[in-house]
Amino acid sequence: MARPDLTPTQNGQSPSPLGRLSLIMLVAFAIRMVVVIFTYRDLPDADKLYERFGWEMGWIARALASGHGFSSPYFPWSGPTAMQPPLYPTLLSLVFRLFGIYSLTSAFVILSINSILSSLICIPVYFSAKYSLGQRPAIVAACVWALYPFAIYFSAGRVWEYALTGLLFTTSFCIAQRIHLTRDPLAWLGWGSLVGLTALSNPSTLSTFPFLLALALYQAHRSGNRWFLKGVLTALAAIAVLTPWTVRNYRALGILCPVRDNFWLEVYDDNAGDASLDPSFAHPASNPVVMQKWLTMGEPAFLAEKRQLAIAYIRQHPMFPIQKTLRRVFYYWTGFWSISVQELHEQPYELGNIFQVVCVTTLMLLGIRRRWRTDRLSLLPYLVLIGIFPITYYLTHPLMDYRQPIEPAILVLAVAGAMPLRYLRSSQANLQARESLVSKAALAPETE
Image 1: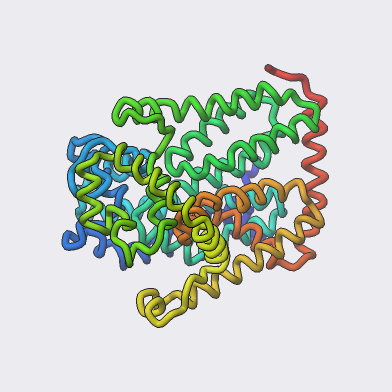
Image 2: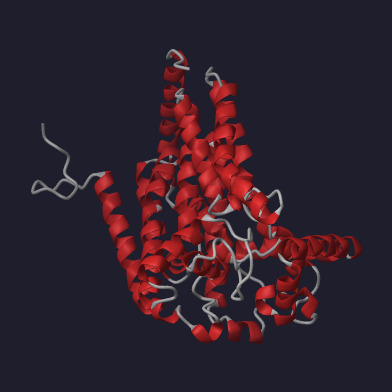
């Protein structure tokens, strides 16, 4: 039996889609590694307390690798913490144990790992786009991700959880698109477990889970499948994955916290005035006075005080958080905050970033409009992501960094907006194929 070729044959045949996808991933990885070569030497900067080596996550990883446990989210040694999710600091601590804490080798290795994870995102991007748009747009979407400047920079130039979360979250989303087609309860359990694991990398992803689950259960019910038990199993699987870390946080800090506990600190830091004018509003990482207060009070008491202060300030100045939130929403989708002389001096690439973000957002909106007219059902999961996930950052910090978990979905919609309509008309055939799969599933006997 002849096997399919992954490269062009002597007869001039084109490579298979999976062969093209493999080539795209190799190109994506090669590009990212070129960037790694030019950036990794800047990470071990002792004069700046190694902040570029992962900031809070790097300091926690240092504590783990030094035998202090999951602690010290800032440079001074301190007690246990829940200010960051556990997955990425644990990964970084393993790199530190093997190659040295804050060493050049560790810098190269962790950025290389980030680059691998970012390149692998091409796989769920491809299958997600193929399910909703078709074969050719799926290849284009994978290519766009491979070459997308933000995807390259935030994996090959920054030590943070962006690539890890992106891979887990995009894979989870890809499963959410089609989980209603399966009757196997183990598949639903697996999806729930992946959702929980993704939350341990970035808990903000958990905000979309109830909506994606409800949509999947609705489609399962619509096709005549048993849906209630599947929903319960999925939710229990996610809870089961999160429970050990929740128990750890309660034992270590005496707080009931599923993943991380610093939400109100971030709300206060960006909603209670201007930190540059009043040092009482500054974050501990940027203000020695506040840092000393955090060390003296301890994490639970310090964060509890910030919660009270944030709520009090918002009640006293209700219009300020509203105005700033609207400004964050605008920034999140345009990249525009300010083009003052000082801003352009500090951020010389600001105008280029604004142009890129506005173009992507415009194409995304065009893609949403097209899909709404032709295939609303496949569009709904994307609307959940872009409608629900950013809310946390609308309330705190809307930096482009924090958009990365949904950037693959944004790019898929942008591809839908950019490609000629003749290539997207196959979506109707895709829809019919999905409906056919649903009908077959409805006729199959339940295995529960």
